[in-house]
Length: 550
Image (cartoon, rainbow, N blue to C red):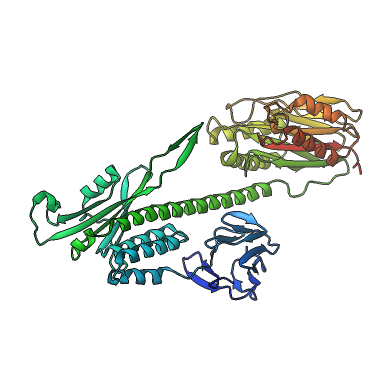
């Protein structure tokens, strides 16, 4: 059995914390009131997850939750927990949950540090406490908690009156991040009565500095040669990331240590005691301080990445919800469609617009670029195009209006290609191609025809006109409308799938159901691409005219 009872620290959105011991297993987590840990959030499942004991280990198991269970940002179904792991139940913006197996260390540790000076062997006691402090700080979940614990511990170790922590900002300058007084007192961040010269020298030289100063002049007593009454003991320690060993070909070289910050301690009442602090204690404190700050920063970065993943997941869900939830059923056509973004969100979309006279409009659009910018423009285009198209204007007028909308509201480098075709019950098929990949018609007799007539893309130029084309479909004809992610799918050797392969594949699909044609195209692309990453957003719409094929 473990030496101590494991526990969960739960922090709510307001910052409030509570601690729950895992006294027995299975330990259940969820929204329902009979769980061992009840979390009141409608996005959390009634029985979301559970913790089971397996020998000396504790396993976190997802209970078939709707939104999933995550540990340190990764989705899991079963996971062996380690002390310090962060658990998220489906959503990242609700509760923060931390699994811990050690006893709460900070209050006890600081009490022991306060007694360290009374020990007959204070140096050994200091080092032992530093190691305990390092263990505790390395599992602290939040950067501010880490910084506060570090400075408070250093104040008590050095018997200082106050401690200041300077950290390097994004501009590379060192700024005062935290100021604390003896007894856990917060000091104003605008302090100015410290030795700026000492801090600057430590930053420049990368070495600790221990000195006695005259409080009034700020000069070291070694400079004046006179010991006056108003003295201040100053200790400033550089916090540096440890040097790393790296390989360069057959050469092993060591990177220079990177300055993270400066820990500054001073005292008037115990000036000489502070400057007599053991050098090994200073060295250990500097190493552990830099390590825990870097660990906390990495933890914060992981949390930020988790938040971004969550926001992208929400954006993806919203974008997917903008696609038709259910494709229309008809006695004169059959339809299948899919859209696969390169990233979490993409710039492709397809849509189906019901029109008067039992007609339907089918569109596939491809916005320039990838990711969030393309997704935002795609959502805007879909809304604008759908609203205008629902009024059933002439196709050239429809494209003219939407083009003017994009030109006025998007930067010059952003544009969209779009194909829009309107199918009537008698097989009449009118379309406009705004710079889009050329659709293909697979005729019932197995021949493949290109709908090869293109206009300018949307959003390029103001005042341009668009031309519509009329065609006719016969029973059994398939229309394949796609984005260039289909023909420009790329394998590991950077070879494109190409239109020739697509046409050859379609010739073998004559007479097949729409779903089978769609599946065959996607399977062929995946087989061609192999292990290469997806190069572009991929959208495919397969329309078959005539009675449904079973």
